[in-house]
Amino acid sequence: MDRFDTKVQYLKYSVLKEVARHAWDDTLWESIVDIPKDIVPGRTPTMRCCVYKERAILAERVKLATGGDKRNPNVIEVIDIACDDCPAGGYEITNACRGCLAHRCMDACKKGAITLDHNQKAHIDKSKCVECGMCAKVCPYSAIINSKRPCQNSCKVKAISMSEEKAAKIDNDKCIACGACVYQCPFGAISDKSFILNVIDIIKKSCGNEKYKVYAVVAPSIAGQFSYVTPGKVIAGIKKLGFFSIVEAALGADMVALNEAKELAEKGFLTSSCCPAFVKYIETQFPTLKANISSNLSPMATIAKYIKSTDPTAKIIFIGPCTAKKAEFQKKEVRPYIDSVITFEELQALFDSKDIDLKSLEDEVLDNASYYGRIFARSGGLSDAVRQGLVENGITDFEYKPVVCDGIEQCRMALLKAAKNIPDGNFIEGMACISGCIGGAGCLTHGEKNRRDVDKYGMEAYEKTITDALSVLPGADKQ
Image 1 (cartoon, rainbow, N blue to C red):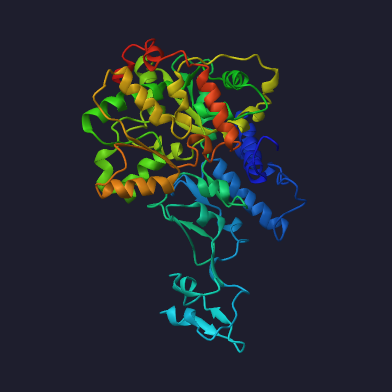
Image 2: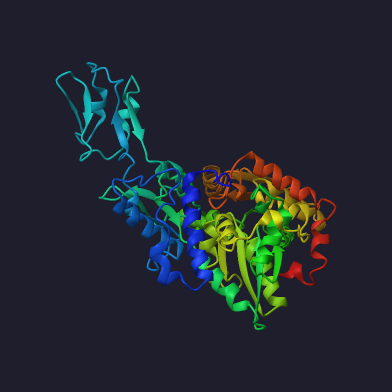
């Protein structure tokens, strides 16, 4: 439990672990009803109105752990039956209402949603309220508040609303799959689909099969995870799962940094393409800026493309902190290179489903990328890497002005200015998650420690330039 930030994460992990355990043994579908019903931490026997509802919710969690609703293209789904204990939200009048004579709230409401009781206290008729907020703006006592559900508060792209049944409803056209709602929902009623079964299937089929080898491409943000062991033991654990080889996604970041620097100097203005949630946000909310998105694939796809160009037998699994990567790898331009994606939460479940004791393993060394490729994991790292890319490309006559956007709200402000042709700089680094990839919804833990760990991990390769890191990969700069 202490490996995770919240009990909700632990609950999700527990389901994933049991699903994976049965999948390894080929007993999943015959044993799925036997998955323990007491895996809700600290609750006996149930946290719901009855054990039957708890079991119905568990069945939905198992469904998500085995791939979710195939009819829903979004990788983020709502468990409707679990989404029933949050207040409905919206504008509410608090006890601070004094029943004043002015009644500005009543005058400001164009829908007639505000009435007065016998004490002249105001009340809001939810069936008439359109949540325009005018009443709250004019109340002299600030007695009217807008109480939103945690999922709505966390969703900065306004993709979540309430259904008629008062459950969360996701607008797939607006959702960027960042997973902020997944991490913030106190009941675990919103979750990301898991492709853990696909990964297990790929690994099992590779055993004794010379037709393909399974590579793990690991995000640099892994340095801040699995804090109970060294990163070297985690790498050893991944190999023990059955992977043929492990490659740093940061090496793909090195490739991107060099190429993105060239492209920026040629075009004069770019937005980054590394964060799939940020890219989708541009595509859906700022379509006039689509032409300014860097033509580079993400580091994940870039290194995978290189691996498959050198080893046609490769099957590639990306392991990282990001729920949006689960959407990215299904895009037509990425699908040829990435075979599946799992998060760090799911990696922990895989370790424990095979009873792999990481502490008992010898450290393995992962030494592919440069300092600059590794610091892509945190906000500002991409901008620093592109600056270095300009230097290593010998581009000295370009005035570089990066705009570092830490979280989707900062991205929105930068993109608004760019759309009006008044950008603050000429390169927008967009990270949908606060702090960058180290703040991803698929992380085991979140916090400032993750940033320090990533910087420390980067410093281990500080003697390398980007060019040094890529020198062992013939043709890598042309990917």
